[in-house]
Structures are given as C-alpha cells and as structure tokens.
Image (tube, rainbow, N blue to C red; front, top):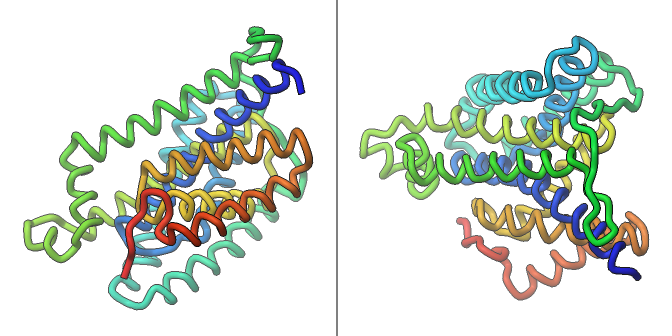
Length: 289
C-alpha cells in the first residue's frame, strides 16, 4: 500500500464523512427535538438529489441556485410532513410515528420511481480541475463539496448555540414541558426542526449525487448509514453524529478500497456492536427513557 493510495483513501474518507454527518445530523436533530424516529429520512435525501438534477442538468439553472432551491423546497416539505402527519401523533407512543415514517418510505420511493423512472442518473460536475497531494488526485469539486458540508455543519452549530430559535430548540430537546412553561411554542419548534433536519438531508443528497449517482431507491442505504452514525454517536448528539460520520466514512473508504463494499458494511456494523457492548448510549449520547 503506497502513500498515494493512503492519501487518496483519506481524501475520500473526509468527503464521505462530512456528507454522512450532514444527513445524520439532520436525523438526530429531528429525534432530539421531537422524539420521533424518521425512517423516511433517506427518501428526503433522494428527493433533494433529484430536485438538483432537474434544476441544474435539465433546466440549466446555476448549480448554487438549484442547491439552495432544493434545500428550501425540502424544508417546507419536511415542515408540512410534521404539521400534517406527525403533529397529530405528538404525545402518543413512538410506534405510531414509526408506522407513519415506514409508510412514507414506500410512498415517496414509489412516487420517485413513477416520476423519475428507475434509471440511474448523475448530476453533472460544476467545478473542473484538480491538484496533486502526495501523488493523489484531489479534485476541486471534492474540495468544494467538503467545504459546503463543513460550512453547513458550522452554520447549524451557530444556529443552535447563538440564536434564539436554536436555544429554544435545545430547550425543547432538553425538557419540552419546562420549555413550554417558559413561553416557548413547542409546536413551532417541532416544524422548524423537522424542516431543518429535512433540508440537511436534501443538501447531503445534492452533494452525494454530484459525486456518485442518483436513483429513486438510493434513500434506503442513506437511511441505514444515517442510523449507523446516530447509533455510534449517540441519539440526539450533534457532535456524536459528526464524529460518527467520520468514523463510518473512514471505514467505507479504506475497507471498500482494500477489500470490498460488503466487507465495509460488515465491519461498520461490527464496530457498532462492539461499541454498544461497552457504551450502550453511543460515544456522546445519553440514556433515553
């Protein structure tokens, strides 16, 4: 194994890790604030990728405009799901929201096959050129995609730590009853959290679709990856989702290159099994009742 190969795998690991973290942070934000498990998160990721594909490749809008439009449209789509489907289930057993999210998987993916066709597509490159790093190829596109992912993660951190709406979201996640007594509108926070988490998934879909390919069934694996990361990092932990994203990105990049994607999947799950034996709440999580 040469230095060039190691660097190439590390570059891929960082890029994948940041994109994985984006979708996992969206998922953990939804769970942390609303206490629901959104199994259709991967289908939201798929929709974001397809929206960008049509706006950028088909209708020839600038990449940045298509990217922002995808995130904004999915924000309102996610908020609509909360208001129409999940809000009536608030306060009930998690099994009800689980049934709704499972139904959404089949509804959205089936609608995607009907609307987009079961054809593998790809989002065109929006930046060309590359540089050499210890002999490994580092494309400008990957650099920009990693940069966008990092900026979005930092922006979310700033939102949660330094803004009124972010502090309110953390208060609701910590203790919804006390936050309501303090005058926080929990229902409003819920739809904002669902919209924001969904838009992060859409952004991740746009970025991953630019690097790889898109297909209406791509949401399943995205959901699996997101839950693996959330379990690694701990339910409700944004920092844990970021760390878990890098761990899974490293496992996928190195083991897929050195062995196969199947080996990477197996080792990813084995890592989770071992972790949960010694730390059932994940790396940065807490016990949930």
